[in-house]
Image (cartoon, rainbow, N blue to C red; front, side):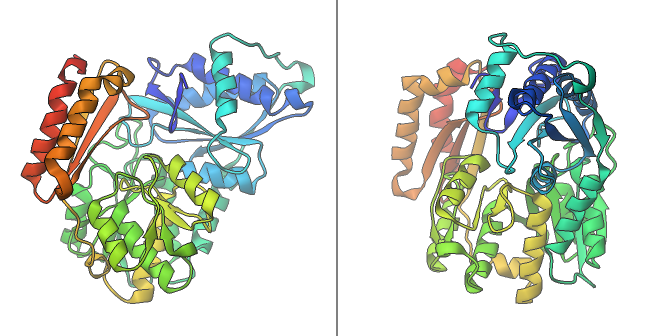
Length: 446
């Protein structure tokens, strides 16, 4: 794919991703789901809080309406809220404007089909051809021109869905929430309030420029301090578009996606709700997680990195739980995409039902030290195709032997090569990564 990566079309606003791109995406999508089939398309559109999201919202809307589509505007909402409402409202497709955990200077356009899944690649290829001028679509005229509808009730229905998914009370539970100054800012607190929790929220005052800035699931230290200083029972941090969740236990320890999968997997299996007794992590999950699964007699099936790959495996095999270390967790019995707020509710369900603290629930897992290094490169495909880099990765793996492993992969959304070392000590991790980093030197971007 030329423009669309593993998580949509992403780039620096008006540099890698421009308003012209957004307009053309709207034009093609509006025609593809509408006039091409002799009818009017219905598209639901949401965004996160970064400043450029409003610009891209206008460009997408103009393109969609110009092709004859009716656009239902959810405004600021989590990405999973768009996926949910696409299905619940029976829309032809959904569009989310967000660059997730990236800085505010970036943005992205994510497309989901009518079933709430990430858009089929054959459709994305057609959109890319249109962007590159390889095809044309007609402009709508007269009463065929589309309209825009303020669709705030869609967001309200999503909030109601989250609340209804929890069949327990949080009365007397002190919960900290870090909303990353992003999409969760207008959704998470109302959900926990409705369940009776004593909610202490931080980073829920978005100004267009502060999304993900030293906050949220990728900058967890502030929430850790907040939980300890306030004497809270648990804390949850979301990313910019709230499809990720990282938890903090009552002691201030980080509970990442691997630990969340363990806690929820053991609980669901205990109650006969874990299909085939199997969890679906990615190859990036910690070796300690796999050992803990073995001890708990849970099966696991690993996939390539990306929640898209996790869900494809879950859907193919009917599995009910999967996710990533980064906090993308999918509960297949109730959703088809990661939902950070839903994940936090599922963790709360386990805490309440088992009558244990989060630290006690996580105790059986002994995680290995990991070192992840992101190298910004001139061309990630060239770097990954370099025999010297492949040879270095093999040498690093041989250096660790059965003590650990090294994984080298390209980012799906940024010009980065990521090298992950996992071993019994931090020093071994650094030594193993050093072998790969030396080989990547010629590829570094200036």
